[in-house]
Structure formats: C-alpha cells, structure tokens
Length: 132
Image (cartoon, rainbow, N blue to C red; front, top):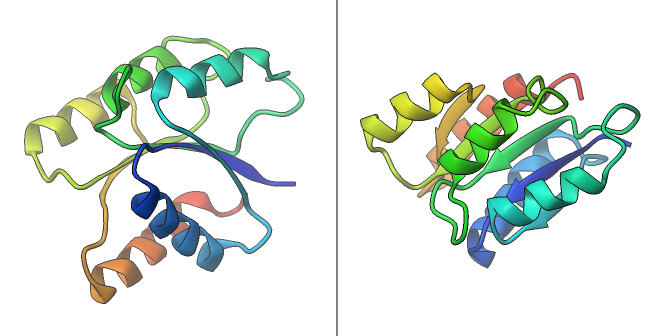
C-alpha cells in the first residue's frame, strides 16, 4: 500500500493535507508525527529497503527539529536520501524556500489559505506524488 510520512504539529494543517491527499489518491496512507525528530526515529525502525515511504512531507516550523533540520538529516542519510521530501509551510520567505531547495527538497509548497490555493495545492501534489 502506498504511504507517506508527514511531520506537522498543527491539527488543522494536518486535516488540510489529509483532504489534499484524499484528492491525490484515496488509497494513500499517511503517518503523521509531531516533529521531524519523531519522524526520523520512526524511519530508523523501518526496513527501509523493503518498505520505504513513497515520499515525506515536512512542515517548516515544528518543535524539536524543524523542517529544514529534518530535511538535512534525511538527505545526509544514504538510506533515505532518494526519498522525495516536500516542504509544506505557511511561510513564503524566499530565504527558507531557497535553503530547502538547496538542501534537496523536491518542492516547497505554501499551505493553502483559500479554495483557489487548495485546488492549486491538489494539482501540485498530484504532479509530485504520482505514480505512488
């Protein structure tokens, strides 16, 4: 079964991504974590060779390890360096965007604030996540 991991500490934003991903693929399973460190600790327990996540989504501003720190750890780990990582944040700060892409993020997407942005997020995630 296709699945992805999501580091997010805001329950409303968690629901937004669930809604978006339901539109991408109803069979896509999401496992969520309150911060990047918890996500990485989960990955360490996985058999990464036979069951890696299809992709990882990171919120930029989570406690303990933020999205950029987590991205850096993932991209420096040979087992997970090839898993696509998407930063999904409310921040439109170009410095953060440039840093995320430089660290190896597949994309940096701004969380939707209205229905038009929600549709755009859905279309973008469909492009990034298919085929899963």
